[in-house]
Image (tube, rainbow, N blue to C red):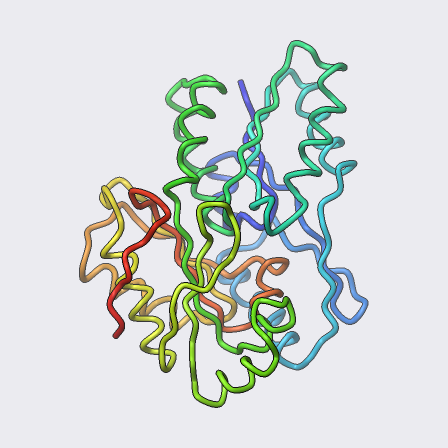
Length: 301
């Protein structure tokens, strides 16, 4: 038996964490000095959305937000409890090129290897964030339910990050300027001209700008086209939508995709606070499998 672990950046709604028996280790943020645990296992989807609105409204109002890492000690405590129960571990990480979380998990795994020589810890870097991690964890749970071993599951899913795409657009460019992804002057001009970038995680797990659109609706339609023009085997896929208090836009995107492709299903949820704080309110991101991470252009709407 093996346990599936994600950090809370994986964005899996609490009801699906329970359904698929996934363990979540949570980031902790501080908003105006107040501790905010990013994952609450007891929330309904409606409560998650309401809590997300409250959080991103605070960000809009200029709250002082500090995000943190999950420490190697936190990982070691969780991993140890699983290993002591006689289970192995499969962990899906936020891209190590945008966060130190993978490294924290690696250090913990190395520390525990001598104490538990008969147990295995497999780490998979999703080379992405949010539901790109979460959907892989759900697929792992389904493989486990079919009786597949840790190594069988991990060996297959280790090939998926090279095909799992994440594309997104933001509401206000100032949050990208705060992280150094664009200059403050470019953010100012872009906001004045209503320039909306399309960003994506590249094959190495870095966030890069892909293209630019004029206006929010054009950006949303471009995201739809990127999914519909590049997705493979859609009837077997779960598409992820994560939004930073942009619920109505997420419903629009979901409906437009449904008009064009037949899918297995969607996960539509509020953006994790840790990663969402860096891209800002009104961000909307889509996650899906394509033949690789080199996407076609997608038509602008």
